[in-house]
Image (cartoon, rainbow, N blue to C red; front, side, top):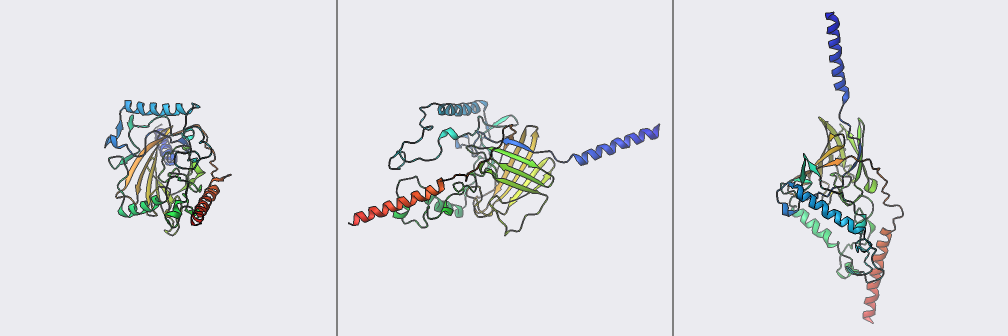
Length: 347
């Protein structure tokens, strides 16, 4: 009888140990909608205050709901198409601009962590804002800003003798405009909410974790328990390597090319992300950004990813994309107009 009891006890112990060994890490797989009204950077008015009061959170949600309700009104000027014709100057007819507000879908409320509303996604530095940029980065930003102008309807890059001009070559246009990457690091790293198409999908296996972003349909492949590729191999989204620390997936990404998705960053960018399933409907996402070529210190943040039953649809950015060609054609027309005007002035 005693032997049978001991045998049963040992069998139970071995079974328990075996279950623990085979249970493995938590499953992060799922589809998530990361849209939120909480901003990436904290508004200066909140100072170092990480938390919102419930009343402030309700006010922000109510103001956004009012804006969205106004979009349903036929008289909403932000919803209507721009008028036909005009000279293309700022605010005038003919300047088609970008998207109107009808297309913006950035969530319905601010998020909470441990039951408290947050003032920003960024948690470090203490003010909830990106750190100061380096002198080197300031020079880079000044050069980039030189070519970011509102449409004046003229070939200003010729009259101001800007070389190279912003429309000299298609490869000079911004990456989102060329459908290479989404605007903002929607696929990461790090991964931020944006104006719309905020759905992500995670598929997890023993050897890889795939993170698919709805916008531009970027797919990141995280190689588990691997070494980084040689420094000479660099890509748009970098080289992501993952490992488990308890119940948290830690993803270390390096080897970016010269134009990472994170605006302002360089090939020195190093991002560490942490994915933790905090319940059956939520994954907590945390990140730390370090690029000594751009920021004076590393900066970090976090926000929850709520699971959704919505589907992730293909964002076919380049199918029938006539815009890029028309941008270049428009630039040539403005250059021709300037040349004709110059000739007329000489006569």
